[in-house]
Amino acid sequence: MLTCKKLVENGSEYLEGDMSRWQRFKFKMHLFMCTHCKRYIEQLKQTISMIGISPKQAPSEELHQKLAKEYQEAMEK
Amino acid sequence: MSEKDLPEEKELIAGLMNNDQLLFSKVVKAYYPSMYSVAYAIAGHAIADEVVQEAWVSGIRALPKFEGRSKLKSWLIRIVANEAKTRLRKESRSVSLEAVNETWATDPRFDNRGHWNESNTEWDSASPDELLSANELQDCFDKHLELLPPNQKQVLNLRDVGGMEMEEICNILEVSSSNARVLLHRARDKMQQMVAHFQRTGKC
Ligand SMILES: [Zn+2]
Image 1: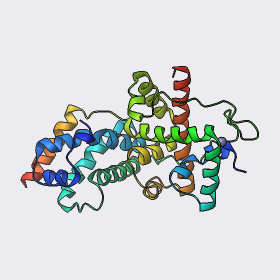
Image 2: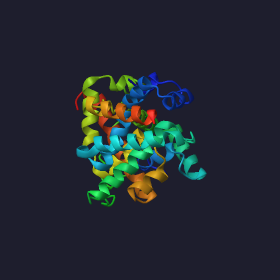
Image 3: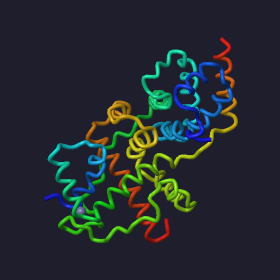
Image 4: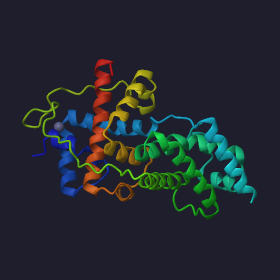
């Protein structure tokens, strides 16, 4: 039997499509019947998107200038 | 400046090859957060900016040879990751090789039969953008990303921020694919728990 705990421990493998068809079928059946786990998988997806958009740093003016100069020089060659 | 404000890929490459300095500057800004995060996860704060700079310098030089087999951003991320790894070797520190030392054995979320103890509550919003728009949540999120063990942070940043393939990640970090998978999921799961806690209590 696939427990909630096992499902949660392997949530990424499920999302990345990284399991056998039989495993996948067991996951789907469990998710069909268990609202907790269904919610967990939804929230895991949301979390992954949040991780992707969370970095918001801006380059320092100094770095920006250096790179602009580097680009300009390379283009003029 | 974000990626959404950039022209689409073809136009982007054409512009960059054609000495469009304004566009170049937009691209630098738009890609910086991801490039920085990848450099930082592998090589640390102190040299992350230098790594980004070196990567761009190599990128600019190689631009005429860019064949568009991958997206420009993926290509640059790969250069950054390799550069960060090289720098780390030069400074003779190595990427953390500590084993996957956290186990799932005792997880208070589940009873001893593996069922949920607590009920997880619904989140305020379905949109990641909207969720992060709460300042306290973004702060808490950043803080927890920072607190992840180095090896989890590396895999998470390369995969979910840099969008790299798992196979490339394993090569760069020299970890087995099963370890990389565990590290990735462990990190994602911690972040999910952090957001869940914040949604439930309103506190970090
Ligand atoms: Zn369940």
